[in-house]
Image 1 (cartoon, one colour):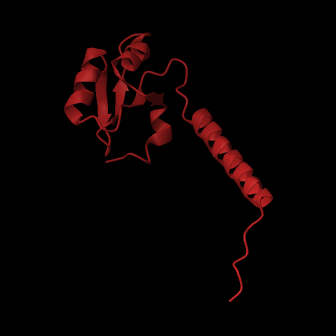
Image 2 (cartoon, one colour):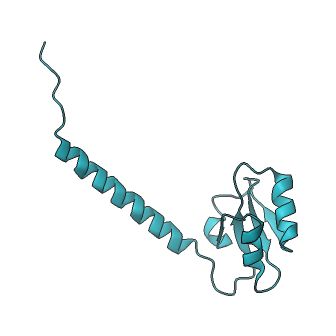
Image 3 (cartoon, rainbow, N blue to C red):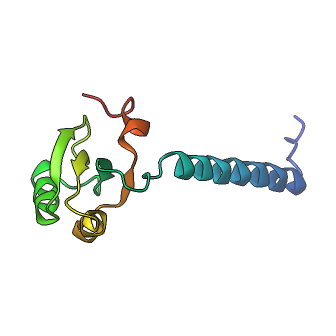
Length: 110
């Protein structure tokens, strides 16, 4: 029986570099395409995924944001922030990120 051939270490570093570049470009494209447009009245917000619907509703209410619609995922809502600093209040209430609701409509529809 012949010993198994090992992959040289330089090949692993090449694959790791390519994978890191792919991940970085995916994150950059997602970040640019999901940005909230300046002056947007309606935004999609994502709370921590382990929060239940009650916690999400309480956090949204504490930020004075009106719920426009719910999604299939309880931690993701489409809301209308109250006033120009509404997005800041939502982030203080626990929102992880805000996105353009049209960009994620197909992903999280009921």
